[in-house]
Each structure stands twice: as C-alpha cells, then as structure tokens.
Length: 315
Image 1 (cartoon, one colour):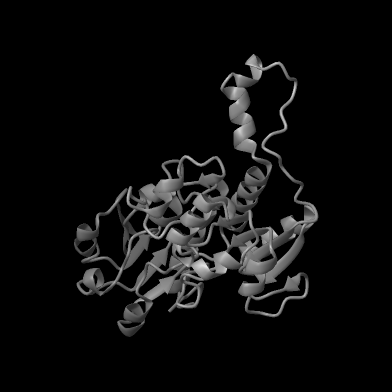
Image 2 (cartoon, one colour):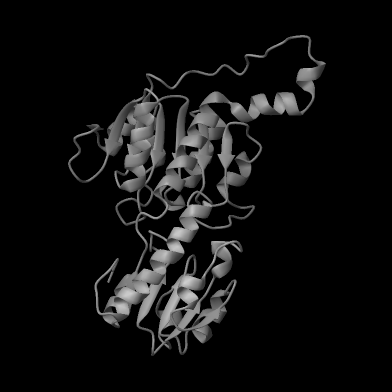
C-alpha cells in the first residue's frame, strides 16, 4: 500500500506517526505546495493530509487513489462531489479534538471578559512596581455568572462548551439543528440579540458561511464578546473588525480565518494591537493528546477501509 502524507509538519514534530507508517510504504512530506500536490499523489493509494486543498486540479492524475484521510473533523478543503463521482473514499476524524477546542474556547472567553492580558501586562511591564497602590481595578471586569452565553453549534465541541458555561453559572442558549433537552434552544438571530458571550462551533457549509453578518452584529448587545473556533468564513471578517473598532464588539477571540495565514490586507490586521482582541494561529485543535488521538484514528480509518468496513466515511 502506497501512503502519501502531504503535510505532516502541521501535526507537530513531537507526534509519533508510526501507527500510519506501519501500514505500508509511506512517503512523508512536511509541507506540500499547491503546485506539488498532483505529482506527489500520482501513484498514491492513500492520501493523508490536514490543510491541503484537494480538487479536480490535483486529483485528476491520481489514478490509483482509493482513500483520502483528513487529519481533522472538518473537510471543507476536499471536493467531496469530485471524490464521490470518481470513487475516492474520504474519511475524517470526528471527536478527536473536542476537549482541546472547548478548552481554548472557554479560555479565550474568560481571559477576555476578565481583561487578563491587560492586568498581566500592568505587572510584567514594571508599572505595578512603580505604582503606589497595592491593587488596580481598571479596566472594570464583570463576573460571567448570570450572563447569557450563546453556543452556536451543538456537536461535541459546542455541547462541551455549553456544559462548561453552565457550570460557570451562565444561562446557556444553544443553537443547533437537532432537538435539545439540556439547554434552552434558540435560533441564530435570538442568540445574536440576547447573548453577552457568543461562541461559534459550526462546520463551514453553504448555510453557515457568513452567518455572523454585519446585520446580525448590529443586532447584538453593545460590548458583546465573540469567540470563533469554528471556521473563519462563518463570519464576515470585515464586519467583525469594524465592530471591534467601533466598540460594538467588546472583545474578540478568534483561532480561525478565511485565509490562513492571513496577510496584511486582512481586516484583522487593523485590530492586532487591541487589548480586547485575542487571535491565535489555528491551534485550538492541537493539544498533544488530541494530535496523538488523531493519528491513531487515521490509522484505524485506513485499516477499516481496506478491511471493507465503513468507518468515519464522508463518501
């Protein structure tokens, strides 16, 4: 079996890939440029990748390709329609990063609400030592107990965040497609109108693209806290940046972007110096435990596929 790993560097140098290496002949590349993908897949039976985009332009010459394994739960970087039409199976890894992403989502919200970075900077800069006061209480922060936390997306990650938010004393509104019994259900427009904190945990699709729009931001409470660990394109990023600059959005935590990495022309470049903005490099999924779990489950996906079993199949 010829397995090609296209971007192992995105999984971290500390991760053991032996569960996959043990399954066949493996060609491993730390990173693969867009114009290198087609050549590297030309004789592959299995493609393993994380961030690489696959479509007709780089799959049409991969005549032996039977299986694509995505090192992620989301698979919007794969042309599923093309794969289905050409008999290429696609497997993802659901649930491997639930605790990791939920942890970062809640950490961002708590840090932003508490202005933790500003208080830390006050001490680390030496300003505290030079002051005459034993304490500092500005900027003012509020307890989140009693606030309303809107969770958009009720899959594993969203449900975990809702559980934590409720444990912290928040009233939780949950927006999801399936019926919900544990938390108060609400549609996206009600979430935007009523919530003090809004966290996003939905996959990118035609129905979620741009769902946090300029109009919905306008309907939000002044000073709303937004955390996005879903996909960058579920938000109108220019509208988000404008909301931060105008003060409509009180704080922003974001780990995902429509272009990764984003360049100087990205709307968020204008808010990088804001103390109420926490931007991280798409690392929410990447705890050590989650990355090892992901590799093990990809190996399971490959073994199950060649054993003739349907396991974590997208198509």
